[in-house]
Length: 333
Image 1 (cartoon, rainbow, N blue to C red):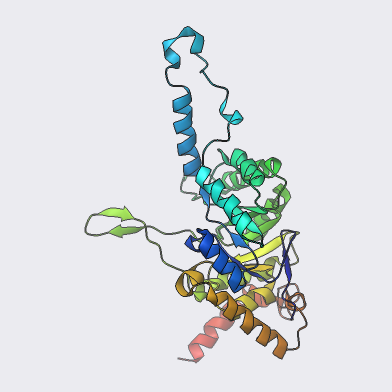
Image 2 (cartoon, rainbow, N blue to C red):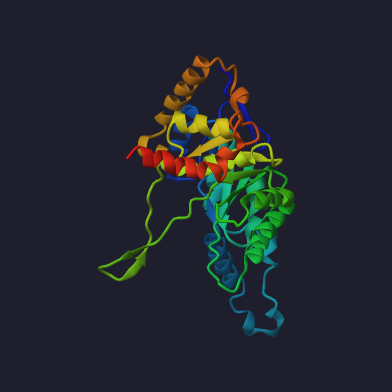
């Protein structure tokens, strides 16, 4: 069975790609993931806050004492852009991963503004990343900013990073756009080679004892895959870019459904944290069994066969299926 797929122009042995998580943090776990059958890996993100913190610290150090002499008002050192500063640990981890693995290594940047992203995108490319994933984590909480402004921020960020690097660029976004399909097309036009659907925004909680807002990390379940499934099916064949499915991918069944809907790859995080790298081997084996039993010759043959574009009932992914689901549920009670 040929499980090969193409993602961002990268030829992969299969569609299983561990997403950015603690599982892709250490070289040991990366080797285990590759041995289990992972076709590529996404490293944990370099966060915008890390870039800003380190840049500010270096800026302060370089300008220390410049107000003590008229000859030093512009600082004692060249501009920051002349230095390969900040995020050294991340770059070391990237280089080490590239040396240790034979599969593609995708770097990740997490943030909400251009900031130092363009600089670090170039540095990440120079460090050997096979591709770059922009994990845009933007919460549109300002009531004075309309949807058009928010969308322009996304597009500006993608355009800026695209101009900075030549390696493949994917964009990981959330589902909260007024017109997701339109925004998907605009992101591709701005320079994205692929889209990762969807970013799972972690929701805060309130501690009733301390009356404070606290972080709350809950791993995903397969039920959350349905939203991704719908939009994968709606976008397949309608945008000129690779499509990666993430959030709620836990089993061979989940992977197969997303491939049938049109995904090029499926990314896993929570499931691997729960069950370990060996889950990949199990999923690949079960996928081969399912595809062989139905006389598929390759994964490409199955991909997108149940997308909206190819479905015998295209309306199933839109509103008409809503009443059917409600009626069917009520009839079982």
